[in-house]
Length: 132
Image (cartoon, rainbow, N blue to C red; front, top):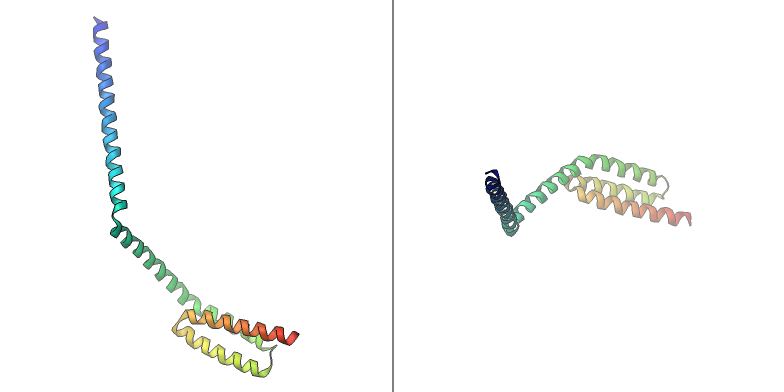
């Protein structure tokens, strides 16, 4: 009689495996549909990206504001060092530009970087011109 019960138990085991496999496939399909729906929700993705960009800009703005005094000191030190090797008219221009740069830096940190670049380029140009 055991031989008759064994095929039934085997068939029940196979049925249970099939049911479990079908249930797993349903769960996988539900996850896939949710993932596709999230990708298709463009407005939500745009909002998320905008929020990330806003956070990054806020961080950059804070960092720039914190670094303004340090950059200002570095620019002043560079200009002082360059001022020692350039003629008086150019030195006055450098001093005036330094004042303008520090005033602009207080209002807009990006202006400090632009002014520093201009002053460095002018100082380098004058230094090379003088050495020639």
